[in-house]
Length: 110
Length: 117
Image (cartoon, rainbow over the protein chains, first blue to last red):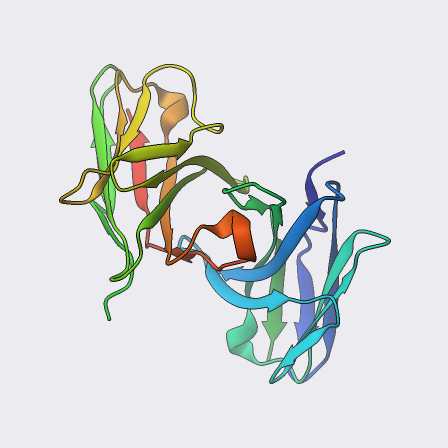
């Protein structure tokens, strides 16, 4: 089983729609969780940290389910500028390096 | 406050040559991480350094790759005798605190794209 697994997509979504995607992680000792966004051939940029109680930042909502070992990201009222690859990222207990999923490719269509 | 700086942005080497990639962390950050992203793959952790110390090199290939973060100057990722399989994007990240402790975020530089001919 891969350490962090995501549906690669692409997800083709009309502008204004709501889109959600999940990822699963294999290391039950993981302690920190993030969503990063990566535009084509650019560096990953932190979108948001994910907390156990769930958290929201504007149009973005992240949820963590430790029992099932999955993380979700919900984007409401999607914009054309949301088109990117979304990376699910996990940090294991005591680990220094982050573990990245391969990403989910999102395309917002006008 | 300038972000993480990496240079060169693009580097072309022939097989057998050496590649040196440089990374300057964000101001106030003393923790540096190197990652490699092969084509169509996710980022893979390579090494974590603090000033003058390699803390975790569990992701570094055993041969030809080395990293340093001297007291003065940028962190350097060095690849000796490059092969075509080394062609990838190499990203550096920095954080103000050690990530493994408290979920502290890492901030990434623009990357160096290495092409080995």
